[in-house]
Image (tube, rainbow, N blue to C red; front, top):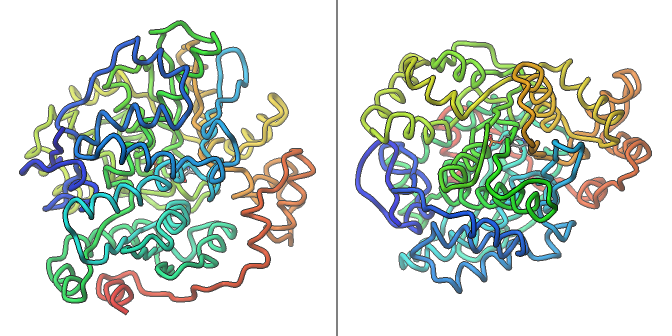
Length: 496
Ligand SMILES: *Cc1c(COP(=O)(O)O)cnc(C)c1O
């Protein structure tokens, strides 16, 4: 299997795509074709552990990794001591047609762990395959969750370093503390004076600057990315769509071949795109429902076919979805354009130069056969958290609540009664102040810090505060650096 850039150009191997992250010219790597699986292959998954399912899926994509390499990487990534649930990605039943796929049982309490526990192993192996002797410098722009997950994945991995840029005012208190208390000899955390798009744009500029690459090379380093633009982030996410489906089969909740919907809280479009890749491989997916918060650029895109960043940026209680430029959408555009890299290149230029592009009505209608989209504003999100607790006795985080709300709205609009999986992306404890405020009213959390909120939430939910949150209270803050949002300052911060 080789990999192509969404903007055209030469093919590379899986390990080359993973090692470089971004293709030359700014494109994203995509598989040259989608491996096909049949019903028997899918049915077999239902008898496997999560790690075995991961090996089965990854083997289709990572053709220049040996079976032994894949197996060892997967065993290390999904080791029982790294996740606090033996199922790794447990599927919880809410009603007879609604399920919650919990992806937050890893070390940093958000779904980013599903990929970032594995990626460092894939990068390390890729570097060895390429005979790369330079240090692999991972640069990350984070809207909150990727940063910590990347730091935990790469900390103390020999031959690598990990530098994270986060928007100074754009992450929750717990998220900020999770990052700034990270130990390890090779980790660095920098606050950017701007929002997530500023941080992401800056990091992308560093990646595509030949001068910066040359300067890093002079210092014995080579850049790589742990953002979801890296194919190595995407491929582990395909696994849990198959895993959820396999669990539904083994419970007798669906017949083999029966389509299942997924509703996915979406920001950079990496999570939901992995679901689409699973579908293109042969997983029976009905609808992929793209759920946005008030930053509903994707909702508008799916309804009009026009992507426009001429809009206000809102900070919300689901900060990991506070995004105007959704990077991985480019991979879907590539499919929508029938894999015409030149056309994608034109759209991406228009986006950069004028802040918008349009794919036309025909392509929009083709996408609408698979995708639906909706959004939840702040009031609806808070209401959904409270309602989910009353209706199902489950406390969900604001990102998951956005998805649950959009599903309610989708069902009311379409009367689609298919079994549907809500992809649950974070532990409520990661956003405990907003969750508690949704359950008890804003005034109930007045003056309380995140730890007091966690204690209160524990009483309400009956789920103990995860130790990753409890221990933050006593860990020293190790990272204090800030920098401006322009290229020069961010480049200097990395070089320092
Ligand atoms: C990153 C993240 C999302 C959005 O996922 P994308 O792949 O960027 O669409 C949703 N919820 C949480 C909790 C996240 O950390």
